[in-house]
Length: 346
Image (tube, rainbow, N blue to C red; front, side):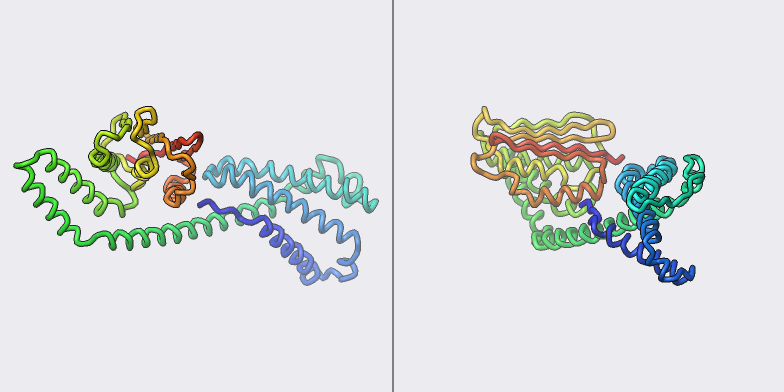
């Protein structure tokens, strides 16, 4: 979901800025057209604006990305003098080296080109580059966030619509299952327990999965119920290692994040051979959770192409956790591995 500003936006922006600078000079400073059309005016203006453009790009793609994007305001403020010194160096190179070699004229007279004076005189001329790049970066970040919010809202509305279609009188469904459970409890304890597990599974899907966050203990209980019913489905042909390590209770995570990986294992994995055993491992530490899955799949199947759900999950993770999560998938030799690490909310 991360959005990048097209580079040509910067070029168009600075072309308009250069035009504004020249028109401002003509309109407010009463600069005569003859002077504006003069070669030296052209060279000094263009080289100055080019120096501004270079520092603008440096600040936008490096300092803003490293510090402003991560809300490290103090580090960003400390980077501003570095940007201004670099502006001085770039301007000196463009005007006193490049321009001089082409036109034979300097912008500064000889005494003013002394390094200390030149830095002092040019230090704050680079501020427009820093200010413009920071404002552009923040504006684009705001626009991207707004766009992401709209996308996520639309996806949630679609999901709610699909959920409503699936919820054909859930109370009727639960009452029916409870009726089956009551009839079976006296005749077949195991079947009755399975009906109870199925009822809990459906109740969770209907009442919890439309929320933004899920309680970790409920999410893991849901996965355990899901795997329990899958074992019934596969009977004795399900070769799967499932484990949960660590302590957990009321920590919160992104809703339905874990079940995505579990469902993919059952949807695409092979389970009927012990030497091709699948595995699902969940580990809980103090402030984060890891889930790792591994399974074999049928030769010739393009496993990665099955993942519209994976793309949607990635967007939800980016929106919820920003850059505080790790998501990896690996496909090789008819095996598929996934790994997710996310922070836990207390």
